[in-house]
Image (cartoon, rainbow, N blue to C red):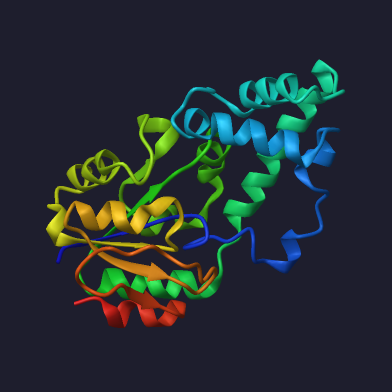
Length: 223
């Protein structure tokens, strides 16, 4: 084995389970609309947003606000987009110390480290503030490459950028977007990261799903 690819959100960085991130008003209230309208827009536009249809946060917010009949003015939409970008920068700048320790332990085993993440333009922009940059090699964001997990193509691209075969790489993620199934279908060895979000994962592979229940467990599961 030569490399470990990680999912980013809810694997290396968490926004959903940090208590200090829970004080913000719900997204739909900040846009002056209903949760149902925002959810409907997301269900219809998620793939497009994750694969680069909207070049930046403002473009996405403008499309969303028009669709959900938000009362925000153009200037207020600009401000909302800027505030959202700033928030994402804050989220990506906050990494728990145990994550650094775990990544250093992985690299000490002689393994390359990469990231494969479904992401929006504002999250790609915020990556420049993330202190993980010095500990990972290639970072493949879905909206930058036009394909998202669980499509095999995004895993193939990441492996090619790190010059490894899928069979020589692990993929570690919480399991959202059927990412573990997608990686396994290509021959990657998968490990579910359950330290932030212990989600149920559909698993049809013949071998059992390996699970890391704590951050410190992960290096021990790598050969």
